[in-house]
Length: 303
Image (cartoon, rainbow, N blue to C red):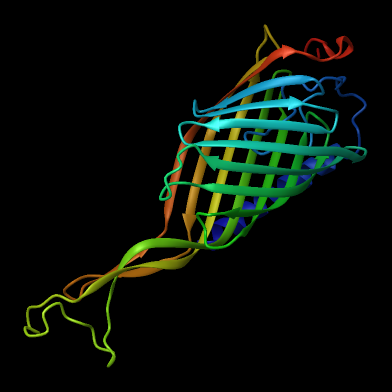
């Protein structure tokens, strides 16, 4: 399965190289880029190096489940928070600063917690990350790396992120992101045979060795894992109201990398793995809730 990661990293590396070649040198023939127009903030969920504008409140919904609010506190600091219905809440501050022409550095954190407090389903996770954005507001790409810690995994892991934005026309943008991490995960309550001191499997009824089933004991097993999430969307900005946009695309969740054996009562063995692939449609809606920007920034969409 490793070839999938290699191919995707190669693809995104080539894409980033293309974006960099086009965007490090400013295009003097391009339209004026004085307004972000619903491109600042997230690609889909990953934060870009272009924050929500100062004193701007922005609402985003993803597939009806993720409800996200972002506010530009300053030109460099954005605070986001939201609900993933019906299970999770999160808060996500980010600092972004321009370090050179068409280059921005970002540092941020995403803290997530379950809305359900029962121990068997409670999740707490924190992702602290840093990254670099290259390009202008219309065409840019971001590489980031973070460290994820959560009570649902036996150990922390690195998370690699790539996101990009490409302006296709006056009101249509192509946006995408990819998250990848590797490590180990716990497979709970896997039936295993119980062995005696001599190394033989124990029987439920030692007096009837021909027909008695083996003693089984559920155990938690650690297995390797590779996890990937990707999302690509076309963002369409309203022709009547540039404070509103819709995005349509496809998202993908995948997990692979670990196989383990589950034992049966009569000597049978079942080979199990943690592989799954889940493609889903991706629909986003963005709306400015009030426009708190200074009047000099309240311009119509670039013509």
